[in-house]
Image (cartoon, rainbow, N blue to C red; front, side, top):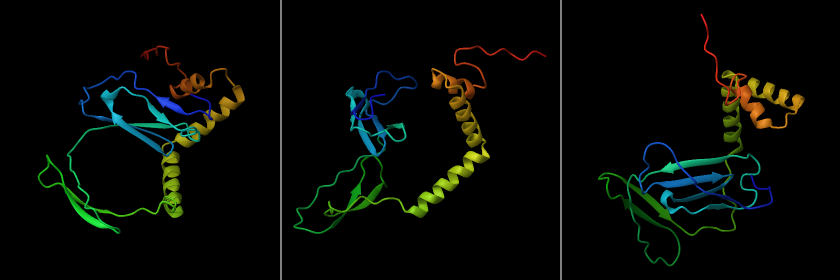
Length: 174
């Protein structure tokens, strides 16, 4: 990965699997920044410096079009206006939206602290019940103790039950 102080580019090099529709959209999220473009565009997705610095996680979604709707804004002087958007290709699909001036000085809404606490508690309960939390803690303790040259292969070997990624498993003899 690039050094933490540099911007980052993600380039789709190749894909494998079922054929993806030509109008599919690749959506990539790094930190709080999301970039989207048609898969066929072949252009790099650029992210600002430090976009994925904290969690080192990049999320990929392939999106396909369900329906399309358009909205022509009325030339309102000020204030809010409500519209109904009907979607082509789906007879009963519509939504109502309100378009209003944004307060650019106001910070984006953060999730409620209570919601974050509940989600963290749910996540911890899941990780504990599945045994993942104890496994990860133990694997990290061994990693720090052993300090291997390639920590990722070392961790992968533990995830693979002691087998390296390339090592064939022997069948059980009975």
